[in-house]
Figure (cartoon, rainbow, N blue to C red):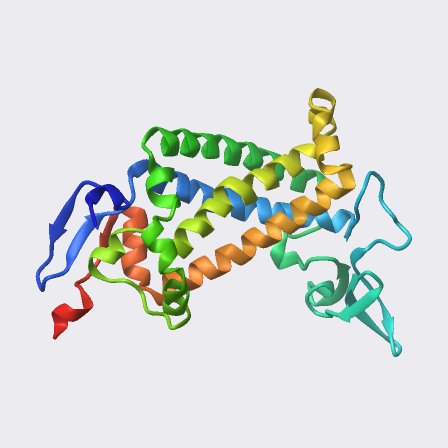
Length: 286
């Protein structure tokens, strides 16, 4: 493999014992990554606060307040209060987490529990203010990352799988399932699964999340009425925004799990200092 395929085609240093440290992430990538962590945490928690004010999802231009396709709420079942998630008329008991959860030791009707929302108490105005501030910071941070990524060929080098990687795509899936993480030369670059996943997140999921969010803003709708046409109505945009955020949460859960399983110290060091230990080739231990 040539250095042109590596994540960061510059510095490396030998460690005692035969392992090799490589400069895996640039300062811009590391800085924008941690700003994203802060922004997405604040956006998720304040977004759930906003959702609690109208805990249902619909499609089209107007809300169906009587029988929405998706809703989180509370009612009574067998004489006892319960929380539920309703999907197209089918109710699932979610008492304790969704619909009905504990607040100050008392069962309280809330779509999402207090420990997941920002602020923890019901305050739509504060939730919206936090959401808007961090949404614009998230957009500005993303623009810096996009300019950097295109200018330095970071996206082409690290997000587009090579032909060889695609021919061994099945092997990469098997290695992931078996938790066999690459060492040596293979660890210098992302594998095909990582590249495709990051490409989808950066160029599909995040733009969809931002555009759907903008479509819920009356001010931006007035300036860009094409947004409403693009999503077919504000309620559809709201649902797309919610599902894209939910997909992003799933991605983060898997991402963090793989960070923990593949070496939390090594991965955290690479995202703080840029240096990543690629270890040695497996056959070098023989």
